[in-house]
Length: 423
Image (cartoon, rainbow, N blue to C red):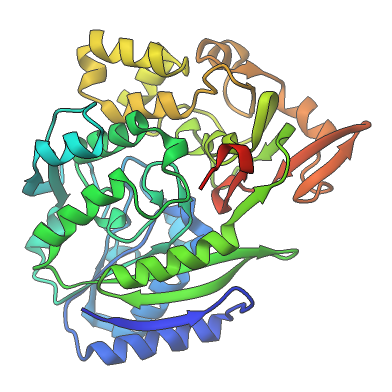
């Protein structure tokens, strides 16, 4: 078990050359490999620099890099245009789509007793360990799992073994892990590397992934006036690299505010956010910073659907974002929702629990669709004319005499005020 590379820091901005040199240094330490699989994130994590690192891995291994399997989870496949933009120079023929309902094999299961313990007695099911069959059947002598560590609504901190066990996971592993996080409480999880969902993932990895030659390549991304900038690169085959990356991410990506926000405006880049399944990060990542009775306005010019999976999209439309008690009651009564617990978890995550208001301004959903799902609605053109993302700065702004807190990309961090984040 090894940490092959630890590079960067809070005051360090890593150049592309430094990322490449650091990766090559670690790959050289691994020794020759002849059948390499790379598992990067999908395009919604474009700013992670995982695409760039995948390109460098292809440059290093050449014909020995046999396949690229984006960790889609339930997300849409990476399009040809997105591949060219994110994975510049990597041949399209190497890419495989992860079909989360069909392409998995079961390696074992985390016992129900452990899930019951982690859920504080609220859940009584085991957790199946499911991964894409390529990992097991591809005869790879190296699997590079690449991605960004950042505060996350389901796993506390994103990436590490989540990239494998959820990103290439199957229906039950995805549904049950999301539901565990929702039932335990996302505000008790976000920004914490140690939490019930992560403990389940670690249990599964220790028991069932040890035989696979997985090496984790983890980035930490900060922001400056010019955009997203890498501050850390950690490469290893155990939890040490994840812990180090998590520690740096909390310093770079977690903003603790001295007072709660009364009005927040969050912008969703249309190139990244097409659905509320992804775009509700605007809610997840700001909710602990919002005052009771606050107003959250989501500028979502690219949002045209609720779920990226047709079944989940339909369930979101049917049940809506109506709070934990209503959702738990719906789960108890609906067999289809019981069979799609990640949708139920998403409905809980996307609700304000009647504590603050949520106004969605989508480019591709009607007022009726938005309001039927439980949100307020505002026309996107009208909203953008008042809240121009190109002129507002990250943090507090004054718009028409009113103080507004602006977040240009919710996927890059977590915001909270001290009263709602005790530890």
